[in-house]
Length: 151
Image (cartoon, rainbow, N blue to C red; front, side, top):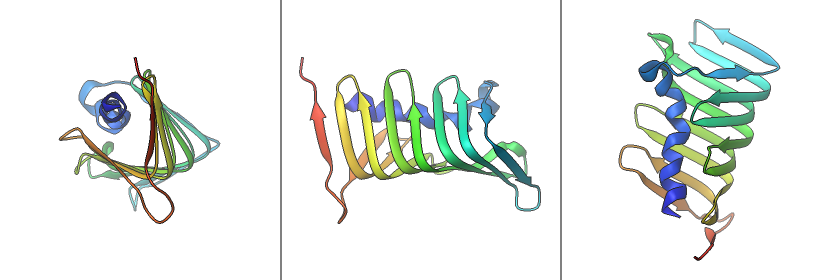
């Protein structure tokens, strides 16, 4: 199960790798609005974000960028029925927020993470990308559960 949690660190390389490694990111959506005043880019309707290390699907994706323009990502938020998929795992939830400065990924709302070694479900997942520590948290809406495949 450690592989599930560590592999999540690759999920949001999405917002930092394009600038550092010049990896292409392709975003498709039904609609796209960019507001230069608020430095906000909003993609709505069947949004698909494809990066070499992860694909993200969501009804809405909002990207807040800094003074450096669209390559200076301050936050990335996907909402609705969010799905994040890498070659080794699949994660779903209702909201995913990546904060590049804090180096965290916060997935909330009926979180399910699945890979070859099992499935973990819970109301909330916080991944610290700096320390590679992932924490599933229970709440009044449910406990954390895991089903693991033994070898």
